[in-house]
Amino acid sequence: MTGLRGYTVIWTGQFFSSLGAGMTTFALALWLWEETHRATAFSLLTVVTFAPLIVLTPLVGALVDRWNGHLKRVMMIGDAARLLTSVLLLALLLGGHLSPGWLYAVVLLEAVTGAFQWPADSAATTVMLRPEDYARAGGIQTAVTSLSAVLAPPLGALLYHSVGLSGLVTLDLLGGALALTSLLLVRVPNPPVSDAGRASRSNLWRESLYGFRFILAHPALLTLQLVFLFGNLLNGLTFTLQTPLILARSGESGGAAALAAVQMAAGLSGVASGLIIAAWGGPKRRLHGVLIGWAVSFGTLLLLGAGPSLPFWMLAAVIGAFSAPLTNSSNQALWQTRTPADIQGKVFAARRVIAMLALPAAAFAAGPLADRVLTPATAPGGTLAGVADALVPAGGAGIALLYLLVGVTGVTVMLAMFTVPRLRAVEHPAPDEPTDEPTRAAPTP
Image (cartoon, rainbow, N blue to C red; front, side, top):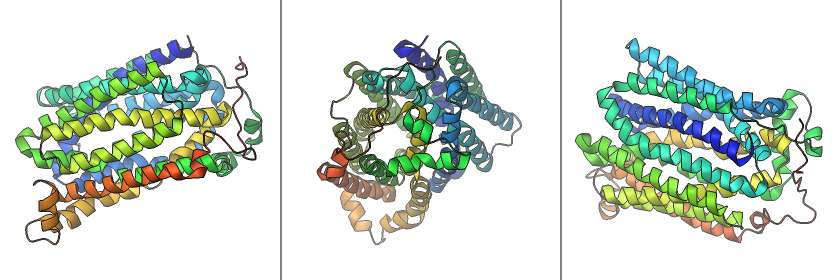
């Protein structure tokens, strides 16, 4: 089974894995807040999640291309990693040894072992589907992950107080097993060999750097990736702090329910957006989808920062989650169209490194910036107390003010990018720019 049908089977299995992971992640966020009551704790969690990816992803991308005759097996590494980390987490819980430090260690291990999944999934999508189905595939993926995001918060909140973290981790194990099983039912063709693929063959070190050379040789693609670098730099200052912001404003008694409601609203919106894109195929002008999606996403930060109550936060979550699939599916379709399938492991790994380069540093800075600078400054008598009183409601005022600053900056920059000629050329390359369009030759048996 292959094609769009096989892709759907894969992501049906991924739904159960994502649901189990989402419930566990939600409960762990509650547990971490109960243990620390510090925004810095969430910043450190983001750092240990993304920092290893920046270091390892180029090497992983080269290995994925070397093993592209066994893409399905490589894809299974990511699901197996979730099983391994869930077993370790369950052992720590049952032994009574779980602490923030151990949690960071488990997340670090999962980040290292799961680094293979995204490059392999992207390459498999390219060879399994027709180019006109790339954006639809992104819609299916978004719908699946968003549906799990709808169900995970209420189930996580309910089960956290009934079966505890150990019960949730056990369900996570079952979801991971179903995801592995679904991969056994599909066939992933081998990618056709391209001239770029032949030229990229070398020792492992040189191959791991080939993706960067490819992007540097295509100025339009490089500019597009720098847009994501800038976007993630700003996002790194805010998304880590969303849970502390909502919990700080909701109080101890209503924090879990408010957080679950916001995440459910985002999940429902993501499901709707993913299904629309899966049926529609996305905008013909992919770049417009990227930039409009980014601008709308940053606009929701203004609503989150200035919103005084749960309805405002839910509205922001709905708008932001609806725009994210537009950005990501349009961007992925652009790259899949412009990159030969047999080098996508290396090139997409380089993409990931560039996009995430500033994320750990921004996330690491976000917690101390909120705890030690903005929160004291916006407290009564602080240097920014007057500004905070005028712009943001009480509770988490320092974090809220940061949201407003990031939102205004992000919207302004993304709208300005429409005027950059080099970026506009990403859909219509100049005659002298190499395109390396992937050939749709028959896959190697």
